[in-house]
Image 1 (spheres, one colour):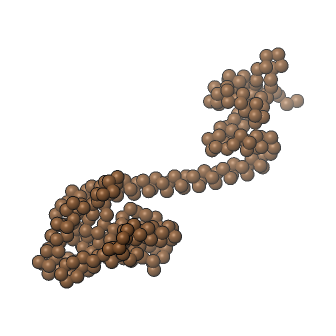
Image 2: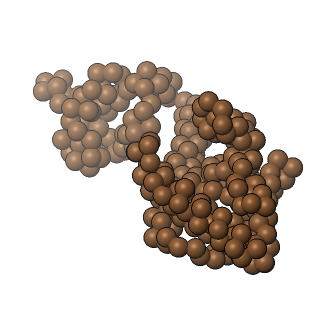
Image 3: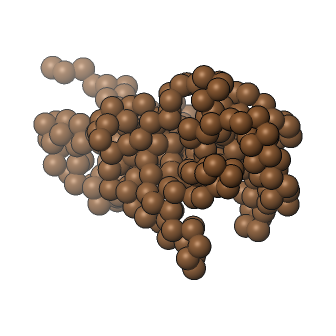
Length: 271
């Protein structure tokens, strides 16, 4: 004869499993967790130790936003194979959520670093030679001079990034051609990408070479003054510009009328 399991009152069960008495009564009412025994005289509910794992499943299910209807179906079928399938599906859901959250966390980390770097860059107001490793970028032709050109250019670039499932690292800007007189003409808008995305499809991207770049930071308030300084410096020293890019900085995300940039100029004589 099978020995009868020890029974626990609803209060004891509540304390042992950290589930309120109100919740236990609710799951009884919904025919999800039926007490192992109910005293007919007092109406008191009692639960067996074997039911504790049922409570664990219920609690896990509720944390995963499993509906009462789904929960009722699982317990009414009383089929372990169905429960196993259900748990496996939920595990896949959890893995997907974890991946999504990790992706969001990575974006936050990248953006935080980008903002920190932007403030550090703006601390340097004078010309500076900075060494950069090889960088990869996606570009689209600049239509500067046309109405709403910036918005259209970056909208096009965003669509390309999305279509090819390329992760943003929040480093974008404009590429310039510098003529013999030092006058800059915008040629492309760009978004820097990580090496992983570059190697997925090299033909889509351009490369900025490793080397020393003449850098200069400025805001919208002193941009013209700084650009003139750069032009005079290049012409005065008879330097040959190979690449010139204006990188947008994140020093004030909320003021749409203000901007900060760093100009990076790859000069033949420095490399």
